[in-house]
Length: 347
Ligand SMILES: O=C(O)CCC(=O)C(=O)O
Ligand SMILES: [Fe+2]
Image 1 (cartoon, rainbow, N blue to C red):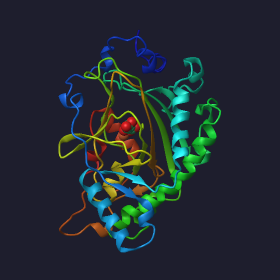
Image 2: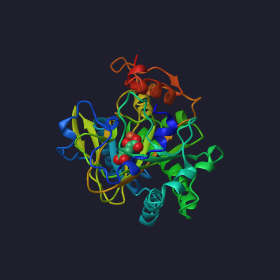
Image 3: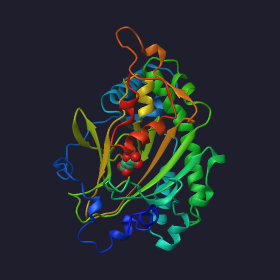
Image 4: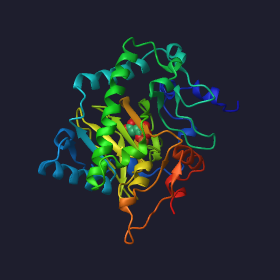
């Protein structure tokens, strides 16, 4: 049978994983890279307390310097002081776990359709591409009038109110972080936020990775960078799997309990004229335990133009990227051809 979107989304990886001793061909990487199943070293990334940079002070300057150094070397940091209680973070995990634990019939009420990416399904891939060993629930969470509530689970009961609370906090946090990024580069505080615009566009993705019988052959998510401004990741507190590429080597990302992991997306790499790196990252699987993470992707309205900040351009550091709008479209057009969108917008 031809693999239509329907036939693929009807076969969640979670269902395949039950009693499965081997994995279907379409998940098997052609040239598995040894580094992903022989655990690579842990990456040394700072844990930044955002409370320390709220107002100008010498200690705030030190924290901003740490932020700048980390984002320009590996493109990611862990943050605490993010304004969310541990209990909220636990609840966000729980609603994800509870949703994926529901019977298939119940989850299918939120099933993705052929027209879009929102809803419940496995990660779509073209039939000639290798598939990810993961399922997802993908929802626009902000702005509120763009939500497609038909994809929002009614079950677990507290799903909507918990996601609402998390989203409200992230809308604020996104602003705090974008201001901090500008300050760390000695730019006007509103520099990146002005390019972002008023509408905080957030897409939330619950990533569910079932145990995989052959972690040496498949990836939970293949190597990619994010098309975002920035991405907030609520990691799984107990099960690791995220790896980041730095200086051509893969590193394991450690989990810091109750911290959020932030990675730079391609659009901040563009605005920072390449000073901040949008890192390639991937997720490895394991044969023992399921894993659940919640990624929140922050992007501006597609109509907004973004470009390298004028103040970062000089004779010594010429402009490296074009002015573009709807970068997410550029990203996906290139992604489908196996290329990076960021390369397409380089001058
Ligand atoms: O689950 C993870 O650790 C990372 C997820 C990710 O990279 C993504 O959703 O884009
Ligand atoms: Fe990602």
